[in-house]
View 1 (cartoon, one colour):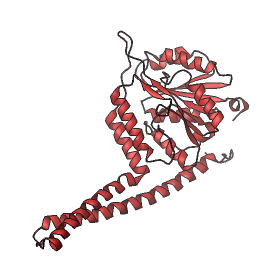
View 2 (cartoon, rainbow, N blue to C red; view 1 turned 90 degrees about the vertical axis):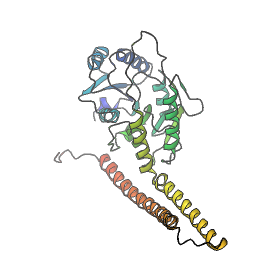
View 3 (cartoon, rainbow, N blue to C red; view 1 turned 120 degrees about the vertical axis):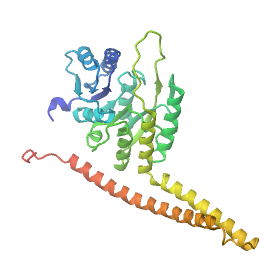
View 4 (tube, rainbow, N blue to C red; view 1 turned 60 degrees about the vertical axis):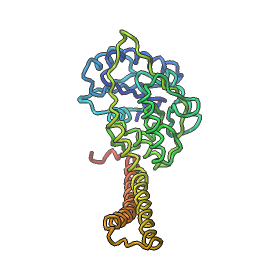
Length: 332
């Protein structure tokens, strides 16, 4: 890395997809937010395979400003892939990722950057669920799914954070560029938190206001790219893989409780009521099945945690190899 690259203090990455109606205004606002910072910065705009005129509008809006770069590719690959392309191209000491339309406010970039400096954290997350943060004009279904989803996901990671699924974050550049990331979709936000926790990275949050613009008659509106069913399923799977006890432990506990309850009922009938229970074949088999299934679930939980530990060791090895300086004489 040459001296010019080393002098870049902050990289801001903003993915865009089919946003031709607002992308010019988004670039203007992003540039204004960065111009207020007394540091050397770069802005990376990732056109995630847009099928409209987004790419053309981006280049028109950025002009010949050398501080702004546009990455384009086809077809659409998802937010995770777009962010990974941005991370790989980033050169800043710190990296901030944000929505292009700055729904967290135009000052969120500066706030995240300052939080990284003041807290000396490796990862700072803008959270509407911290005291002082809130949601404004967000449809109640989206708000409910977000709040419940983040509460569930909090159980799966050791970090004491309230927002795992949000994209608006600040990173120490050396951390985010060293993580071997794989996710192409929005699951990348969870993957980053999970892998940062494995490395013992310091994670903190700042309160932020997520403010959606109210719909106005006649104003251009973007098509929503939100797919609730797929997102819920993928986030639940992440939670179960990160904390197998959430699935196997819960099911095992319920199965054992039901089996024990049925066993106590059968014992009551036999010892207290002096009834013959040999003809209650279905009830006896159900009791045995529930108890055995409960123990099997706890066994699966134990095996899952062993697999998770192996995956952790493999990830740490990957991370270590990525951090090693490349031998210029080695074969590619």
